[in-house]
Image 1 (cartoon, helix red, strand yellow):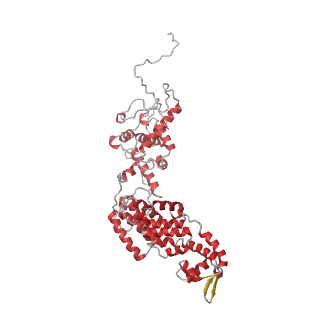
Image 2: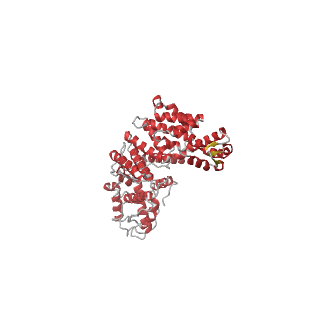
Image 3: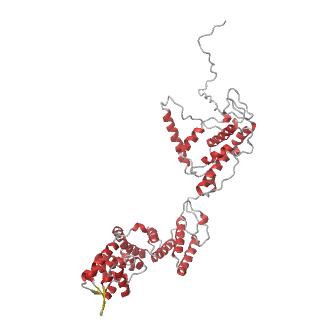
Amino acid sequence: MASTGAFTAVTARRSFDKRVEPEVAPPVLPASNGSTNITDKGKRDWPLSVRSYVQRSFAEENILSDVDWKEMEAKLKQVISQSVAAGTLTSEDWDNLPLPQMMIREERRRGHQLLISPSPPKPEVHLIPSLRETNETNSKKRKSTDLDSADGETQRVAPWNQSKSRNVFESRITYPEKHSRNSYSPEKGTSKSTQKLDGRKKRFESLASESSSVRPWRSSATQEALPKQAEGPIVGRCRDLEKKYFRLTSAPNPETVRPLHILEMTLDHLKKKWRQERNYFYICDQFKSLRQDLTVQRIKTGFTVSAYEIHARIALEKGDLGEYNQCQTQLRALYAQNLGGHPTEFVAYRILYFLHTSNRTDMNDVLADLTPTEKQDKAVKHALETRSALALGDYHRFFQLYLDTPNMGAYLMDMFVARERLVALCAICRAYKPHVKLRFITEELGFESDDESARFICDHGAQQYLEERDAGVFLLTGKALNSFDPALTAASARPDSKAYV
């Protein structure tokens, strides 16, 4: 009887290649009722239809540039694994089943439709029954947790590579260079957690570099469908004179933007409509649409200045300080480029507007920027004199200027003239006692008639102090002062200028 040594026999090394690929044990798959045979060593004889499906998936003519290789490989593994789990590996029609890259593109398209419409139509896609439940979750926006799970799935061995020997289809597949994130390197002296952090950092760096071309929540198919925006401004192709205003939520579409020559015709059309119909809500909506088309095309010419000036004047006439402020802000930037227009007219409006809002800080900035030439302009000179009269408390001079306001400044002065009339009434009640004629108040405070001045006094709680005599109607100033003080306090509250922006 032969004796055995106290050692374990090992196989001699036959290769001097330092790199030794570790054998990866195939994953344990559920037993199927099909005709596939599983050997004792864990090998699986895949049906010819499955092998043909894998071969077509990796064929060069079927590769899509917008679908990552790892993502397609994970999808293919998911399709085959779920078919094995469902027991339909042999009964599934693999010849007519969509390729994994087409499934991925379809899922992206459905996810984009969910973002742009409340109830998009669901396309009919022939999928394995077990895949229909997972398509809903795959079509949603990808999150950081989804990136981690997808990265972990791609590290598993695909079903067609589970055999130890290479099959006939592997020559058609190009494998990327393998880098194990969890491998421990004694030379570097780093731990597994450090390796994971480095891998995560590299992955997000690659995502950040790709985000400039394709956004995570927008499929590549949608990106291909959208027209590529040029580096410069767009040029509109719309021919409609009238167009409703819609706030932009995405890049402007040239098909819905009117070019410059159409906008010039639109402005003439809107001026005629305003003179005929005087419908401010319609005109304001059309002017906002016109201004939007000018902005998206970056048109800054004399026509742009004219459009903003006309809209600002209409807004002043209707007392819409919100739209007036928007036009005034843009006009300041356009006037700085010397594009023409009427800058001194709107400087005067700006001074009167700051008198209305009692904004002394911005008023000082406007006064500091005035040039000697602008100070000689009639409208600017009138606005400066109005400011001086208010600063000095000279209500007599103020109401003389109020009755002789150039351009459309009277619309701005109407917004604070009631406040100044209360100030003047309080001063008259203190200076003239025991009474004054109502006609005197009418002339001093710029009323058009005695009825208008009497109505103003009654509206502010002093109707009982109006007394009719043989010589006319008198206001008992000694008693009426206490009625005007509360109204003056309420009217002198500084208006919220931000409410008009």
